[in-house]
Length: 88
Image 1 (cartoon, one colour):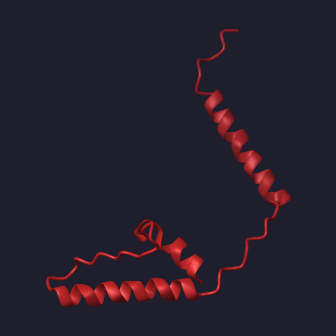
Image 2 (cartoon, helix red, strand yellow):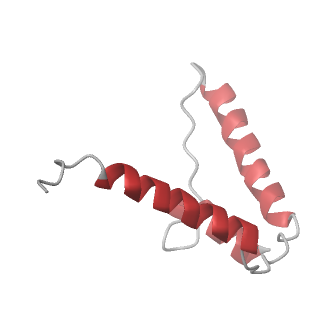
Image 3 (spheres, helix red, strand yellow):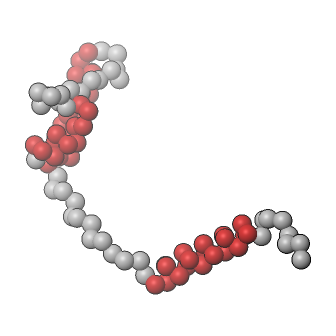
């Protein structure tokens, strides 16, 4: 969990391993402290969640590959027809 927390902290983590959260949303110091504490707790809760399952790589279906290539062919034909007419 600590490794996930450090990864989630990102640029807020110092070289000493301290998480620095700045809070300047509110006018008073007390409300900013409460806000910073809530954000720290939210970060810790997110790190405590189990990691999502790994993505299993899949191959595109034959239909999706055919549709993609048909679209590319149509686009290429459109671009080819934009040129000057052949002087035959």
